[in-house]
Image 1: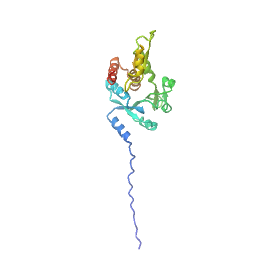
Image 2: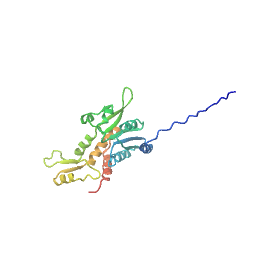
Image 3: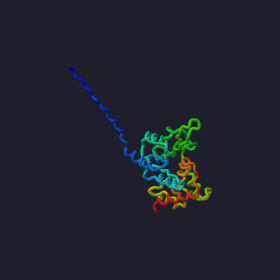
Image 4: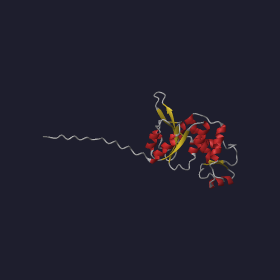
Length: 227
């Protein structure tokens, strides 16, 4: 007499991959937004960029936001930009050059400078495929800092300097030396503001009216220390 032994094997559910804590934090920040972008780089805590764009979006009535992604992980960033609600990114050091080889199209300024600080989206007219495009609005920020603040660019005497440092303070030793020599000192927040406005032109398709620019300038000025 023989006995038949039946063994039932119950499949165990596959372990879910562990979600990195920083990704959990990103998801929480994104959850309440209609559209989101990133500030992608390292050592981002001093940057006013997310605050700047938050002010602009509030003035435009948009439930958008820019999230800090303090990382050197390019593969992670390229995965995150596939999200349907992603609109674009500010790209800072150390990625301004290395991001270029991952982009589909570059603006003329981006090609000429060889560095990208702005990632924006467009669609391929033939296929509808989403394209990752690169621009450089840093050059616009520097240019407009002078155009908007120097009353007489052809003045024969003295000159103007742009102090790109703005945090923790734009009132640097170099700026003090220039002022003592009679030069006009333009704060680096001006470059921040004008390059950021140019970025949002790519992302939102909207031009900011002068009164909104004034609100943005006042908001940024409120973050600076007193002299």
